[in-house]
Length: 85
Image 1: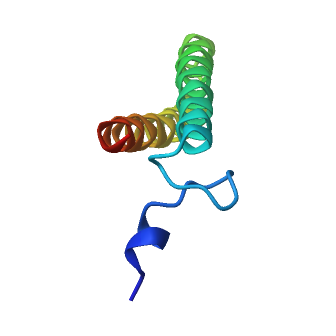
Image 2: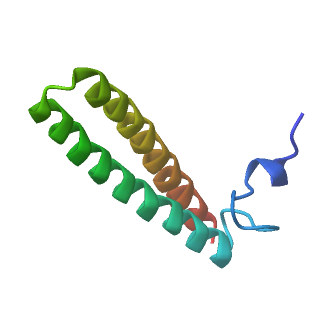
């Protein structure tokens, strides 16, 4: 079973939790990377659809949905951590 401190740790920021300044910065970076990934995946999906390559378009659409999930996770954790500060 995970301890409460481990549950709040932030990936990519060693020894930080979501309610520290470094943790908030790391979560902000995760969110910005998620935004870029979603936009790029949407663009590439549209390009592949216009080229008629449905398989590649579906693959990039799935990657885009995954990136959107990461963006939502980062924003949720950032908001949850900022309430504790």
